Length: 309
Image (cartoon, rainbow, N blue to C red; front, side):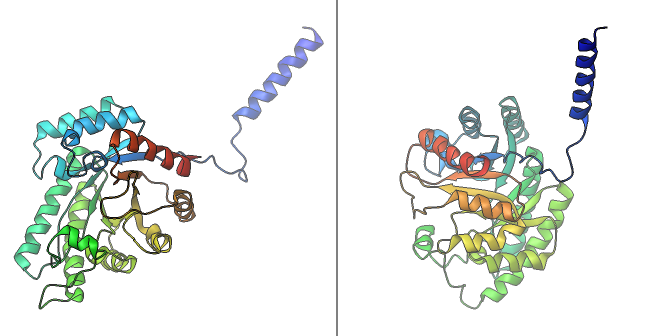
């Protein structure tokens, strides 16, 4: 063997050995891609009949380049049968998507103990639906007092409303802790992490959310962070709940929002989440008036730039 060939083989062996060595301990690990999903609410928004069908939303999410889909339960009903659930699971799988979240509604803000019991049972049933879908997390709410008359009036008053006569917010906190504590036990059995959202009621402030979550003391009750539900000083408030966040719902408002429009800085939001080592899913909730077929892809581009650039 000629010296030059011998030298070449020796050098190749050294190079191969070096490549097989693990990275040095002081070298930073490569940044993992943030997975971005989309809520089916982004398409439907309670009023766009063409996007009510969740299978259609799944197909659109795949075409647009999302990684997963968060289902709004109201789009499939409170009692979806096995045939529908299996259809949606297969539809997501063949499109290469995860069904990564389920958004639900319930209320525990009522002095009527029987109604609270019914809402606990409702939430437990929703947890089972999430498990059947293969969804690892489920959005829950405290509910509202219902004294605003309707949702538009509640929104006009920035989510603030008085308790029902004879009750107080203190009563409400106790009810929410008791009810969500019971729901968290069911969630643990089903393997579904609950995310209490900053979504009006007693979850309207970070202090209210944290009070409930910390009182329940269950790893199966965390927080779903909605970037668009703190209307004033949002970044300070979002940072307060970031350590307990299990899912981020990211609002955008192309075409202007139905109730309000926030100019959210997603570069800043991505940095504050990274500061608290959040590495979970981001789920788009488009709430603007533009056509979802154009506004949802634009929203995805905003989130990809902020979280994955």
